[in-house]
Image 1 (cartoon, one colour):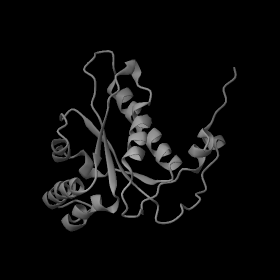
Image 2: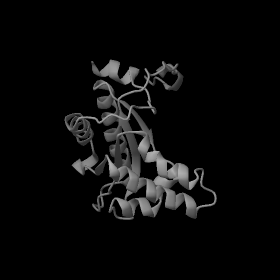
Image 3: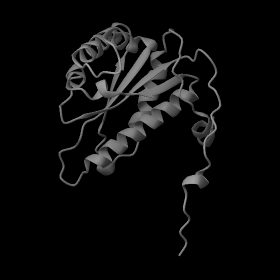
Length: 184
């Protein structure tokens, strides 16, 4: 698949089969993420691949967060099952550089570039993927689960697997909707 076609045909696919994804495919997705641009080559991304029972452990953390927050959009039982909706989750975090000339905003943007590379590569490999977060993703207990410094930020939970159904075509606005040409 060519790059432009990949970009314009990729869709979020949230319903995937409960079939293992070969490690080689996951490694290719991770390589794509690590190939993203970053200001001053800080490479602020951190990737955590969850398969098997590690998804259950994440579910326990999410359930604990949901039960401690009466305003949670998810009940503890539902939160506990969320990580089981795909055979692979790649959690992506931004660990910011302590260099004075590096802006946190640029570090976060670089990690978002890594996530987009990963989503496009999953699509190229015939996998379905969806980028999820939600309030619980930013909770200190999630950072503790991944042994991240509290100054870091969770950026994405990528749920990855073989698509259950073909992605629906989505009508998107033309670039013209968002573009101003400035020639003088």
